[in-house]
Image 1: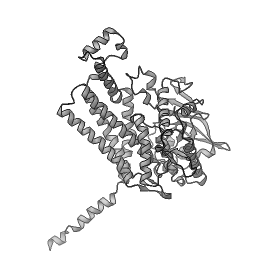
Image 2 (image 1 turned 60 degrees about the vertical axis):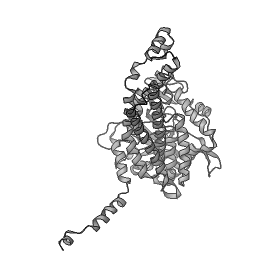
Image 3 (image 1 turned 90 degrees about the horizontal axis):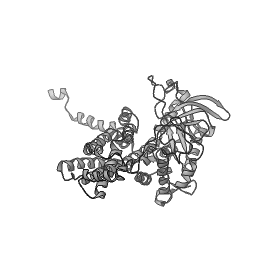
Image 4 (image 1 turned 180 degrees about the vertical axis):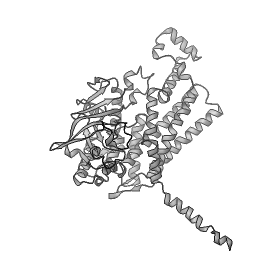
Length: 481
């Protein structure tokens, strides 16, 4: 099934328990903090359901299906998946981070190697779950980390971390918190698991499953939704792209047995993410989305430089040239990841993990520099603007606004105002700070991202060159002859 935006919005009115502070949200589709982002997600579903090029025929069903659920077997399949990710990223210009194609891509990758669960029944559960989200075109969030607070290195040592408290005929009962469900208020289902290594003794938290967002006992505790505080679409142009983040509290939630993927197995719970194509397919979406975002930010900055009449400065052009080069380097890396697919079991492939983790490490370190350079170009312009668009409704302040911009043409002045507001929203606002923090930790803590690059770099080939060179060098004994 290919779902439309209207069908998605209707599905959100399901009695889910979303809290904003002490407020229990009655309907996320009408709440000022979530209504705009929900409409953005609806646009994504409309985009794919109306364009056959963003679909494939699923062999198991013979039905037209969202490309996000295609289990790739070739470089061409990876390119097809990129087409879907690009189309969806372009809807929000890459500014809606973990869109529905992120976690669903992970589950699709997991379904390429379900035996990692270590249990035949759990493997079948995982495959059936992939089929369920595939055939219903569902939006998944995920909660795969314990709350902060453990210094022991053991997830089970975090006392409020979600853990198994009972097992019965109806299923497995869990209680406690899981982090950090981006899109938790807007999703259909939540993938729960462990995206960081577990240790022996962590069996109580070593559980992975899929659960409906409105399942009894699932409490979604949202951070501050920025849209609820937006003044106007001009003053807060990115409010509809705030996908929100949430802590999930499991209040004695009974997870049905057919939704369990891993139980009491620390190695398999972590392996579900890193020993399947899941991590790779999910991060491919993240990189494609970041490419759209950086390209949009760069173009918006150039438009602002033109509007403020300093684009002719050779030094400024040099800055833009450097930033443009970085955007193209990111694009080259995205293409390189799929140019030599990495083979997995059962004939499936993924993007090459060397390029994947190199990109993750590079973008983690570079994006903040990219945004900072744009803050430098914006300088103090954001602070020289009226408080909001109500200034244009007052004849006197409107006149002053035009005088401030040294023009009698309101359209010219307004273009500058809109561009300045847009740039501030992307690099200086509270939403921008959240996004910048997210880009820094998108693939995990920096040391984890760098360690993945260490683990997957082809050291043997590189060191073979060193060994060959040294073999040609005379020994001390040979030199003495």
